[in-house]
Image 1: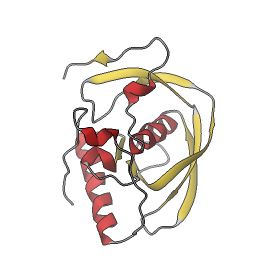
Image 2: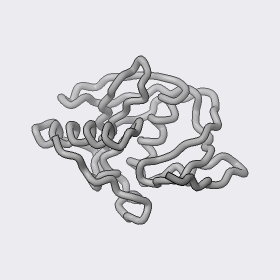
Image 3: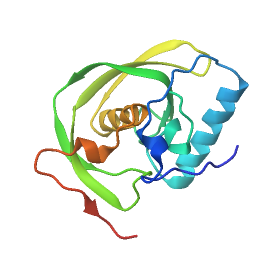
Length: 157
């Protein structure tokens, strides 16, 4: 598979709304493979297709927990509970972090690479990552979700 360039904050594509996936074909499989490799190389926990310039509702996640590596196509959050305020970063906003308000637990539905619908749920970092990546699909970055009174912090490499 190929590594893709991760778009950064200056790229207007990050503000656009992604379109649903309609074709579950070889082109989608290639995209998913490229996203998995790109996520691993960047040492991230989640990546939305829009972050590599593809306006499709596709997300890959691997937060290193019991869920393992996951592919979410056309995902939708169907339930959420609780609150957490934790520091968050983003591969598209390098060297920036900020505390965001997210649900503690989420349940979502999505399709797999063959188009089959499934549901999954999780809490903590997993819930935060799902919300973060689904925000990307709607043109929202984490700096727009900062907790009340919080500001963006700048981190050096």
